[in-house]
View (cartoon, rainbow, N blue to C red):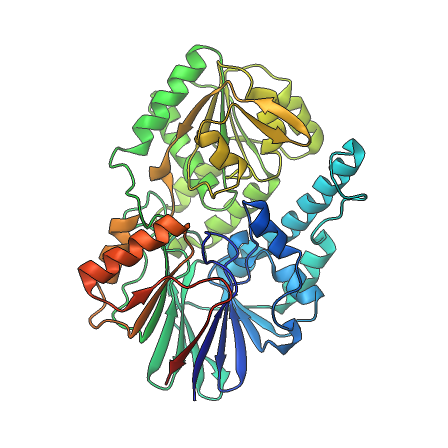
Length: 455
């Protein structure tokens, strides 16, 4: 008798997180994320799921970001009928993120067909908005730090992870034995979110490694962002910020409001081109206890930008001249309205493109940050002449030192630690630090690797 772990994603990449946990004949899928970035990874989304979705007893989500939840509409369409356990914040955010993802996939397929820019005829969406809406009733919201019975003596507990609203570590108990999935760990001194909960023990641990080989800059991101904005608007340029609609958009709006109200940047127009980010901000306000902002600060954040709702307004925005600031999804420029803004504004050297988080390998964001002269968008090669800035200390992920500091809180070493959800160099760097500094039994698992953990 034992636990069986099958790594279905989140290995060798920061995307596609999926971990199959089998206990006494019951099957649980921890996270259900989309692969993003390199084409080799994205093709996995289209391949048959490695196990029968109907055989799963439940899905358990750490949080709502698509690299952890975005495959759920497909899983349900292919036969999964069980419950999806998550926190209330995650349920609320999935309610906007997943339908929006389906809508964008349909929109991109339609655009590709109209432009004949796809190798497939016709181009099809991975899933539709209808698929996404259909999976939502299966989400069951659970409070933090409460024990949920999963049957046969198996329990579930969500522990706060920081990172974004609703983000949790997943603690699965079998008697007095525990396996902990860290999900994405937030930062101890994040501008907006509260720090991850302290954890003192787990028999087995899966820990993320997005920034496993890097440290965030100690400089205040507010100062650097202010400098970029001032320099750009002086030349009547556009500050274009690809941003994640959940988490990053809210932090940036709050920071830009601070810069504007203190006179550190001029009173230029600010646009938030993501209706989904508006809904996410309202959810942010509802889950007051998970972050540091007061109701008054939340209200100010909500009023910081003019909201661009329709596609027609988005097209109008591309025809405007600077100075102005535009925030638009997605954060790694993998899709959404940011692509149209890049086509409009990236060729102009007066403008600035500001990335505020991790850029996964194979994404347009990673290519731009690495210095690409041009990127391909909807069949066109778009020159990158705008100034490119990367502010990684805006990231909502703990860096290498912060992860190690969190791990130091364990009173006893886990029997086995698995380093997941990181690019190969980041995961291996964190593995080495855990082995040398903590002297733990640690490894980096491979895609589709199966591990048995004796109870």
